[in-house]
Image 1 (cartoon, rainbow, N blue to C red):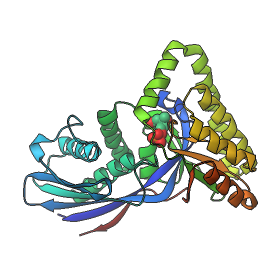
Image 2: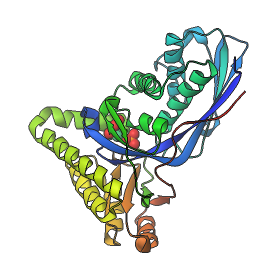
Image 3: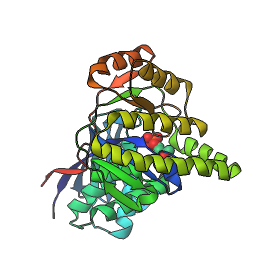
Image 4: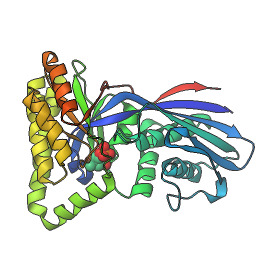
Amino acid sequence: MKKKVKVSAPGKLMLFGEHAVVYGYPCIVTAVDQRIEVTVETVDKDILEINAPDVGFGAYVKRLNSLSKGENVPKEVVFVETAVRNFLEQYPVKTGFRITTKSQFSSQFGFGSSSAVTVGVIATLNSLFGKQLNKKQIFDMCYKTVLDVQGVGSGFDLAAAIWGGTLYFVGGGKRIIPIRMSRRLPFIVGYTGIKADTPTLVRQVGELYKSNRRVIGKIFDATNLLVDEAKKDLNSGDMERLGELMNINQGLLDALGVSSQELDSLISAAREKGAYGAKLSGAGGGDCMIAICATSKKSLVESAINTAGGTVLRVETNAQGMQIENES
Ligand code: PMV
């Protein structure tokens, strides 16, 4: 049996269709070139040890027979512990292990650090114990983990971490289709400096949907059409069209009540300096916005975002999915 496996998995950016995807509609997500590494090594004791120095957590130890599914577990390690428990429930093993995580990006950005870590844990255990789970099986176990921990979510971020590239994704993983891009698109990413609380925003939209079913249903239908259009334009690399669709999507997200003053001012700043389009990315309320513009306008748009109080994050999209880095 192997003794040590290291897997890396990418973060993500939502391009189109957030929130509607929670209700079984499609969205488009792209993997970014900022990764999280998860290393698992076997130990001779009956324990799970977690070291997550990036989030200030060292040597958290639990006996294997007392792992929980999110209850009373510190938030810094809850996805790791729950993922391990879900794996062991299906595949009991007779060894303990030490898990170490290392991130290239801050968990504050909304790049999906929890989902990338969850994928990293299941993928390392899969390889360590020779279980041969395929990507969809890894997705299903990770998705169960996310639902155990936070109760809501479409799983789009897990798909980006597993498959990588740019995906057309239908809520819950009903369809996961890679989008072939004719070229890497120059998205600009602006961070608001505010951490969004995704489960709260998802629940807030849920309440709005409950009390305005027909109206909000139409917003989701419009989002669906927009995602289908965007899929074609990503394919052909038509940036002007994509920008237009981003602006429409932002209007729909605003109608759902999830934009914020900070997001709005970064989005307006980007548009004023000539971006083809800009929108929030993810749950809203904070985290990041994205913009697309001609190369000639890039530095103008970037400095406008900085002047408006944001921070431009340099990331490439369409990055590679999870990968085994080494095993011994
Ligand atoms: O906040 P993020 O970046 O995790 O994005 C959330 C996207 C939602 O559609 C609102 C929720 C989901 O799980 O799809």
